[in-house]
Image (tube, rainbow, N blue to C red):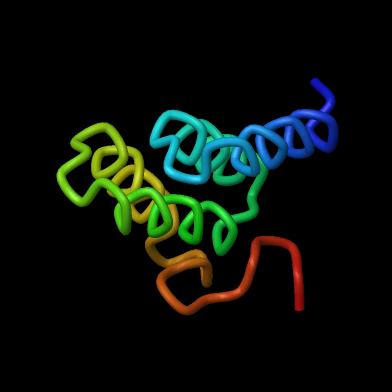
Length: 83
């Protein structure tokens, strides 16, 4: 798929409704799936700032963190493939 176009559309949606949990979640999942772990975390954290009890975001965040154990992409780590 066209990740850059998808990213632009998600960001446009967030300009319209910055509190959209679904948009933050889907953008975060896409970022994680493409190896942009820091961006994925930022998305999940942004969603949780508005909706701290969102179970779907917490689940996606947990999956992201479990995938990154020992890869240098853990909390505070660098994006996959960079640096």
